Amino acid sequence: GAVVSQHPSRVICKSGTSVKIECRSLDFQATTMFWYRQFPKQSLMLMATSNEGSKATYEQGVEKDKFLINHASLTLSTLTVTSAHPEDSSFYICSARAERNTIYFGEGSWLTVV
Amino acid sequence: AQSVTQLGSHVSVSEGALVLLRCNYSSSVPPYLFWYVQYPNQGLQLLLKYTSAATLVKGINGFEAEFKKSETSFHLTKPSAHMSDAAEYFCAVSDYGDDKIIFGKGTRLHILP
Image 1 (cartoon, rainbow over the protein chains, first blue to last red):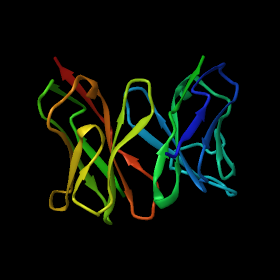
Image 2 (image 1 turned 90 degrees about the vertical axis):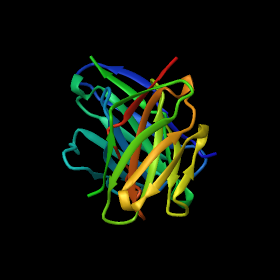
Image 3 (image 1 turned 180 degrees about the horizontal axis):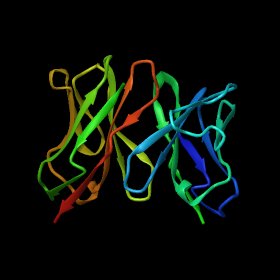
């Protein structure tokens, strides 16, 4: 079946640095991908909709300049957390739309900012 | 705006007992409804999905959910709980033609031996 892969699965970075998380659709093309974040013991909150070849659409309250999303190809979307701070530590998960409007989720990426 | 409300952040059932996780939705248009499961330190796995084809939806691992428009509900059930069912369960909603999935706050299911 369709698979969405995220990399890295876990990353630790120093406060003030930037970190990039990749979301790849392995066996299908995805014109649209979605990025969510999940704080410990909380639900998943949609951050933004990533559209191939165009700017991402951010949800209210999500800082565009802090969470840079690039959807450069039909199989890859990246989320870059810029100038990361400890409060950005979270579980980030992406999803991609396949044929017949089926949504597949990646396995998520744990970000820890120290 | 779409939303889902999950009643009970924690539910405990005995092994072998009925599992019932409650979800009510709010949507201005006929929605897609989902149940996802998240095991500790893992991503999301789709249990089942309602897309208006049938009101009773059967999913994986013996779970099923019934769409009740009159009650705006989409409760998840399983006749007999297993220890392996212990996880976080999320109800979610999206509009037709809109892929944004909005999640409920989740219900942690505990299975008692």
